[in-house]
Image (tube, rainbow, N blue to C red; front, side):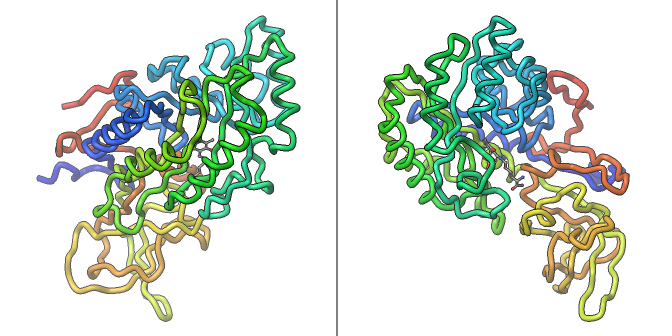
Length: 394
Ligand code: LLP
């Protein structure tokens, strides 16, 4: 009997061997340059995934108080937590200070003032890195571009001196260095080379080393190959870190950090869905699945394309619009997708769903929460997700 039979669709299926291989490569490639990686937990906070990432010694990058608490709960040390976000609430700031996280990535002068106030109230100095918006075009979808003037993230270089002065005048702000993040799903190294050049200029112009900086955080954004996930299961971390090393000119004692999300986890996950109906349209045929934008909202939100495979059939090729059941016209996984003839009951695998699928799951239309399952050493494995440390169930 198939080990997956009896499992309710839709569900996320993670290949933990591929995850480990990816983490291994990223760790090796970064270690060659002495770089430090914080996993961007927003990409996927599934506890089995974060547990494995913690085992590999990565730090963590959070964007909410709940992410900080989740990271601590999963065993990430406080001194490995960086915390970004344009809208940190007072409670979230207080909680992060209470837990003595490594560093706030501060996104405005106004936020810096609030952190200072709360730190002084609590009698606890705050370590801060200032996030600078460098005006570098990431050449990705506009909804995942973050480094331009029109974006809400970071501090414009014209306001940087004010932020730096605030840090040096305050006994409650401990200035750690600068933070950058220009966007996500960046598939060329060129934007990173431009980012390095901007960082070099800003570092020099504002004499950042003389302010006692110890870190430079280059953010995340390295893309994956959604068109050919099998051909490119592991991103080319080597070329990425080499390009940074060749172009960055900050002093050697500055520790360079990264916040990688998608590149570490995207390819290890799939969304498995069942075909409920194949329906004849006017000039097309629809394959209607039991997964929808509620389990994978990337196509609806960013016109993202994910490869789709029919796991049940291999016959003659037909063309389908693969759609979900949600009451939104944008609930479409792919238009004119070529699939072997597809029937009610067939299982489809929607690929590259390890990042920003499960973590962006919605309950719209009162949809049930999809569960997650794992392939470990090639075997289908169920884990009890309520356990702090992952435990394999027999
Ligand atoms: N650091 C910061 C400050 C970020 O805002 C992000 C992502 C990352 C790191 C990690 O970026 P990554 O290495 O994963 O590209 N939901 C969208 C992606 C949103 C990314 C938000 N910020 C998607 O599905 O494409």
